[in-house]
Structure formats: C-alpha cells, structure tokens
Length: 236
View 1 (tube, rainbow, N blue to C red):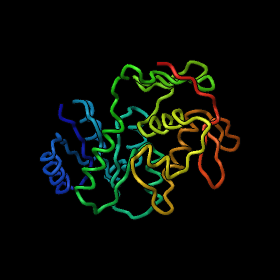
View 2: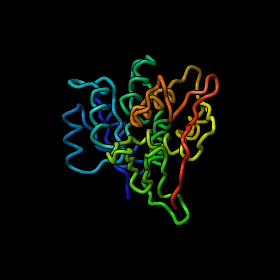
View 3: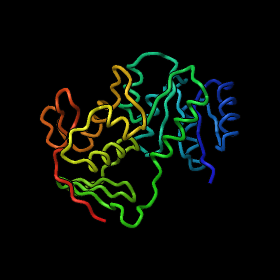
View 4: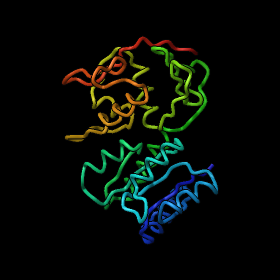
C-alpha cells in the first residue's frame, strides 16, 4: 500500500515541489496551507506521516504539533526556516519525531521520511518476539503500543516516546549514552550540543510520572547517559 504523506506549508511552490518529488518516489502526497487544512485532511482519510512547517498563518507549527500529538500517534516531521536550536528543541518537546531545517536537500527529506516510517511501523509481533513488557507496575503492549499505568490508566505514547521506552526496556539496568540512544532510536549520530535525547527522556519521564528531580525509573548517570533502573519482565 502506498504511504500517504500530508505536507502542511503555506508556500504553494514548495508544496507542489514536494508533491512532485515525493510522488516520483512512491508516495501519495496531499498538500495544505494551514491548520484548518490539516484537520480537514485528517478527517477525510488516513495519513501515515505529517510534514509540518513551523511558520504558518493562524496556529503555528508548534501549536499544531502539540494538538496533533495529543490526539494521535501519527509521525510528525517538522520543517523550520529559522536556524534557532530552541525551535527544534521545543518541537521535539511538543511531540515531533524529527526536524529538518530549511533549505534542505529533497533527498535528505526523503531519507528521513523513510527512516521515520520504518521506525514507527506498527507490525504485529512475530512468534518468539516479546509481546509485552512489565516494569514497576507498568505494562507496555508491543502489538498495539499501549502503555498502561499501575492504576490501570492508558497513557498515550507518541512514536518517538514509544521507541525510546522500548530501547530502555530492551536494555534494563544498563547505562546508555546519549549517542547510543540516538543511534538506537533514530539511526543517526549525535551532533555537537544535540539535546534531542534529553528532550525525549524528559517527555518520557512525564509519561511515566517520574519526577526528574528524584527519578526512580529513568535515572541520569552523570557524564555517561541514562539508565532504566526497574526490573523488566518479558512476555512472549
């Protein structure tokens, strides 16, 4: 089945360029110019990934990203024309799965889209694979990517939060460096001053109700990285 991409950018020329380029590379592309178009497109038909510009008329990209993430686990790739790291960090905090600064090479955009889709595929577990993780009263169901709190409440997870939690659960009680976490969750190396993993750990801690000042689940190991301190049980 052809993946359906939704491009949200007020630059009509860029939308047409991306629709042509991505269409020639096997994707079906819908383009809209603002938040109203985004919500209308999502109501009409399923979307596999949203490419969301930061600067938009009306609600900006960060606002739309936060609202969309609260409603849906659809992967989000943010575009920003501003070279400010703060925008990128806030975008990740709002729930974006990746970001790409403008101007960009379309081939890099294509590579990132394919990488995100590979990482976020919700394929059923194969025989012999882990179907459920249990830790500190929490349960992560792999098949439907549902996280259940100790009190039975379902906690929504974005795609990047799910990947990060899955990595911690597969490497319990082991210190994982930021570079290692970035490689395992996003398939890329860290750049100098890259804080994306710190942002994602912070988001995941909030989901797990883990106070960063006295973290008991995901602990910071100074100058080394992070560690999931809980004992993990696996169900196959």
